[in-house]
Length: 124
Image: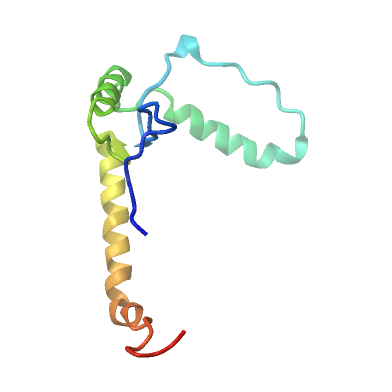
């Protein structure tokens, strides 16, 4: 089977790019939504730390949303466009860590993994 990583959707010249981003500031304090009041007491113990974490992460993001918008326009004009776009220095660092971990896992069992093909002349 031949793989086609870039294939326009329905002949419209559209395609899907997986956006991988981390800390892009996407709203200002004035544009934040207000959530409904919590109504299920069973979740209170977990909700408190989670809400505190979300609040601590609001504002210090290093990513500039205007720069992200320009980058998305840039990749939308690439032919073919990338299958994945890693947006932001922190996202690149996280992706590189993941790649390194996957490479370690491949190397740890490379010969075992490669030994799984049928032997020459064997029938299925």
